[in-house]
Image (cartoon, rainbow over all chains, first blue to last red; front, side):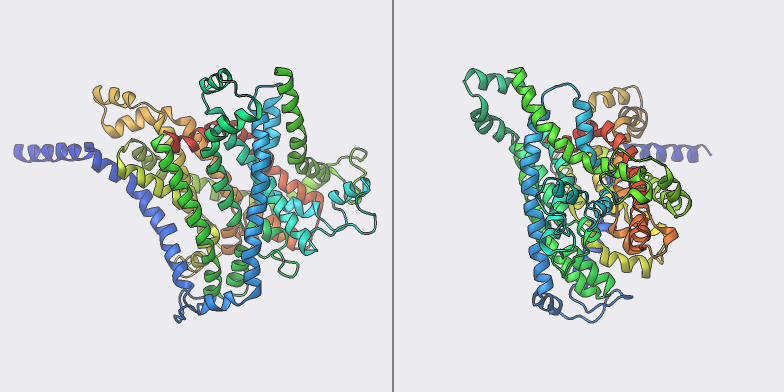
Length: 310
Length: 274
């Protein structure tokens, strides 16, 4: 009896001893997360790559292996090639607008002034409100009959009453509409991150550059800009991945139309994979997001290493 | 200098604010208009505001059901996310050395993998292996794929700001490691945890790609997909009602978001800059 109690006691101490070991505890705490991520991101990612090489149709996972057939077919498809171009166009133009606007805004917001909280709230609205809902509102702002933008344009005598633009119905206009919504919703995010970058520059740097006579544009170019560049880079990389892989804005606004003039990789993958039921081909189309992903991931890693060194 | 600086600030901020916030103003105006005046933009101030659109959306569409669905999925996903990300975020913050750091970065990189890359295989897995097509549980099962990496990264940043000494003190006072975690670390990081709850919930509310792929019946939709498929695609085109449906979740969410934004930035950049 006594020995059994002693044995149980020692087992408990041993268990406690194990639980106190750092390595064991860390493994115990991290492994659920690793398992979850492996199952929900890793496995689907491998499956997506596998599907891209099969002739899988809706209703099955897998199908005859067709090698590079899907890729060969989509690369000869003008709609797909257009979608590559539109994705690049949408991402690069909108992010260029974002960098300029967010840079200006962040520099203006960094000082304390009356009503700052209120302005910050309004500026953040486009990012804070769910984009999948607000973009539906833009369908109304771009409505062919009642577009509020057209009303302004007519009032300002920029366009005539009878040749009002049909925003989502003409190819170039539709692309411009999508790009402006992407820029509109990313500006607040980039502004906030830029702001964090500017505020992280210590006051001493400001003082030192003032003593050395650096002012205005010169100070901005040689002192402020290099110091906030790494964090600005993070905002830009996020902006690129959010925009390039986004399906919500182009799908809700135009679904790739008119005449596939705003088809992006994501909308075309959805239309081919889900609506048309060509799972394999859809997966092959989506695979073209991987280069963007790799580019951003490498950028982030370089940045993380840089931040570690300094 | 101060005056000039202020003029510069206002000269930049005021026009930008108008451009960025105007869509919300116009949604609000539209939502309060009677339907006959909706197509007349000149009636911006001179119309009889009515809450008719809000009543319509609640009584004549499945809007309430969609809100319930979004909340159901949101709460469950928040619970799963916290249960998995809290311990992991803590361990990664305390696990110094190369393994800890590269594991943290690896988990962060998975956050970058977009749903638009994974929805095709997942649509088959959900339908064939999990038998969850057209069930909200499909969303509950899949959403942690983006909320967990995001939450771990945020929490890691927060836990790094909590001094190790506090835990050491608890250990000396006879607390076990798990005990010090539950009794000392979690209570101090409550604001950080709350931030994760809010941002996870807003990610779930915003999600569109999985929701439109997995859910096929009107009664099981979440808010954005419901408004889009039933109110827009369904050719209902009751614009005041649609604007009301957009504003109802957006405005409270934006207010809370704003209140927690500073913590969000600390956590988000904290993981990288320490």
